[in-house]
Length: 489
Image (cartoon, rainbow, N blue to C red; front, side):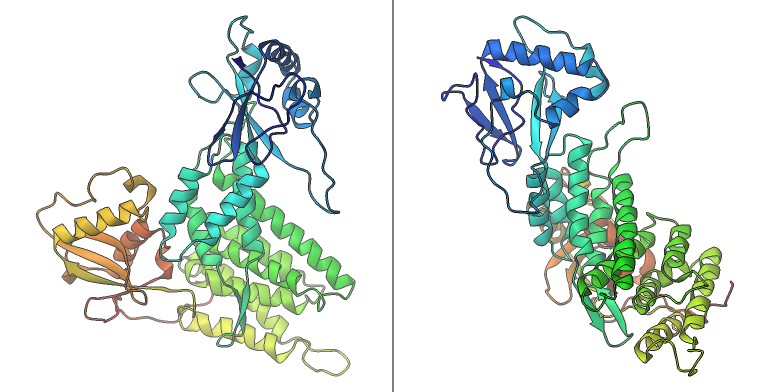
């Protein structure tokens, strides 16, 4: 028996159909967390299949399309079709070819491989994309806000990502969770807040540097995790806006709370991407314009609420520079004009008191220098411990995959060889569980911002979400004179 091409209709349980040319004794093996399978077929059938595959490879990407459309039924066997419920999607698979050294072969190089009478140098591995998406969602659902490294390490180690199709499926599965995130009402600032947006953003921010990148055929820009994420975000935002507009025209917004919440969740997430510097300020300007920027119409009040939520998310970050400060002033001017809008006939306020209070809360938040919002902060505290204890805690965190990916292969924590400085244990205030250790510090000279960055690097929690307490219970903060931001800089 020679190792041959994998059937495109591999069953999800690790088996495959006993089709033409396959005997019941054909061995099978399961790889990559049960999501990728390898099949073996008769030598004669392999040779025929390889010949057909070579023919298909002669023209651009036709070989891949042929495989996708399941045209080689003469060698993969007929699959028993099971009736599907109405609305069910077709099964989706992705293909990657590997050489004898188990290294991926770029698609553009496949046509140069010559058939050997004694050996077949290429195996096609089939990845069940729907199974990958379910696997990623299962891991994401187990995520804890203070132990994000566990989630990042699990996706890196357990999810097999051999090509860009699989990478796109990973992003898609996470983005489905983002757009369907629960949205809570916050009475203090009259806003609607996506519950897990910050956590999802932190996980994606860390994943972008540990998942593989794939070259594009034709020498285009590489397909990176960030590129796929931003494309998915833009596509989702545009689709949500279209869906919202259709529901508004049909007068079905009140009957479609899911549509409203989906839009709020996506807009909020775009704000989190800006805070993490994955999108530019001009993207924020475009989003605001698309939602409420058209001056010849009065936007629906949910769109105003979306913008208010976006301002609460990005306010502190965008106000930190002159250009962003000017943009924020323009955003708030537009919101103020909408709050002051009146009906021509009765001179009554066009928007409800709830929406006007929401706009007012944004103005107040800016005047107060964007204070932390309830439910968005992760409270941590440091304690001084011995270096030996710190190293012991670090090793336990490593065993539980609670360290950053780059630290998982280290023998000792950074700073373990330094003779000076203090060792700090970082723990959650509420749970009391250890989340990180930092060595070689002087607590008398700790500065809030740099120390938060260090904790962020160790925990994957964005620095803006951290509230750090000293070992005596006092808040670590850099005290200094503050003044209200000046409009326009």
